Length: 411
Image (cartoon, rainbow, N blue to C red):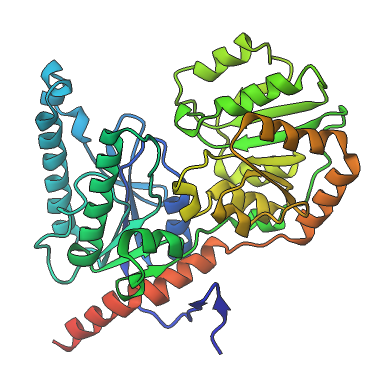
């Protein structure tokens, strides 16, 4: 009998081999989710090519460690370097259009069965009038709304929501979300007619790594993993450390991730005199993250209290839970599914004073810290990327592309 996971039917291995393309172009330092999914799908016998940007903004096509092709990014053409390109939005749009048209031509050449797309540049254009043997999936990973309450920002957010609704309803063959609340935000209460829910996976190592004894320097060590960006309002964590420091120096906050703040937070450490308690480190290889988490006392799952994080949880809080790490998290609805208050961590408001109070409790109550650690270890859970690949295969890919393959063979 098929096993049930989060309301999803678990698949078997009866599916045909598919040629799958995973494509995203939203960042030069993308989340490793597609790399992990690609590896898991290959283990199931599928041919999987990953198309993602490099640090220079060019699109690399990879089959595992083997490079298939490189396409210049939209900003790397000769015309785009012209100063006028930065002044007139039409020129930037034109270069994006040319980029997508080149991508369409390449997809026609390689003829994959599945094109799995994280929306970025002109998402409505990619599937239009493409061969019927290609199956296009619209993969909505994150909905950024409520970032800025200005009328211009709200207008842009409204436009994005409507554009994604149009793509999900009329342009793509199927749409995937990580959480039902995200699906409802885009498609409404009848989202299940047009979309599937596939949760975010975690690497196997997160569920198996053994908790390491943190460095015994009498300090409680807090860990933040993710992009170092002002978009995430990380200033509040630094200000919390500044407020806590006159009371105690028995703590450390370590940040690991790419610096997207142009050195702003490095300067803030010096300006706030936090050199002894706050450090920023370069990003670690994904395979090293589980052991990194296992060496800390508390995971920081701080996010700004915006609607975005009420729609779905962050990747890092799922990894903290899988690794058995106590969690200090902003009290957003999606994180309440991961953190049980006073059991495996604390939920706090998005305010400096609340962050201070949460950190203080872990620092000054060693019995609470120990109980949280024991509870977190007992509550380890998560869906591995192998399981996520199976769900995509059975519930998303095979019902469409598998049917098309069978029809083509009959013809």
